[in-house]
Length: 256
Image 1 (cartoon, rainbow, N blue to C red):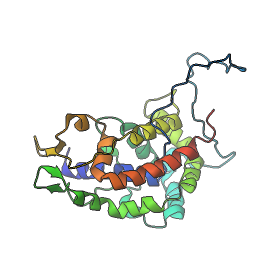
Image 2: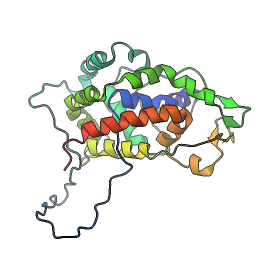
Image 3: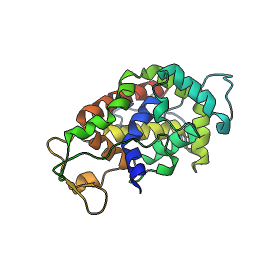
Image 4: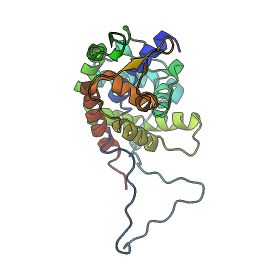
């Protein structure tokens, strides 16, 4: 992975928040508690071969949409309505929906598909203290984009997401999930990110090759998304988590 790609990874989560591809109330889907009394109504099981949708999206009826391959101009216009021109310096304006879907799907994994990023590489490198610890100054690298995150109205972001949801669903199916439901995957990923621990005290680093890693094996084995939140610092991570919780509430309002 080259340095430009590494830089981009540090920026992935904020963009996911501000374009709607991100808010959760708790980590993981809650396990159903064993009922203490017989249920009054039994929900029918999903037909064989058709996975149950956990978090259905209320799509706008008869809302005209462009095709997925021609959706960039319409989505860019909606993003301008939300953020003015503040987001455009950071955004790669081609294949936006497809790249967002790939990025979200990859956040709980060890690596991201950096060649399909929705963001341009950002200047700057990981800031260390004495070469052995993650410096608190590293968080300042995220300040320009965090201003956009902090100002984001997640209800409006969710409205744009619902408006374009059929395209996100199509991109998810095209990615290799013919029976998958993208909003369920998005909620799952949000919950995963909200489970990121808040690390107190100095974060020690090691440099076995040209890139830094966390010296703590427990931190280093975490997903690309969780490690990014840790690198951003607790203050930025808390802001992003708050926005993710708001967004999750908006996109699960129809959940059974």
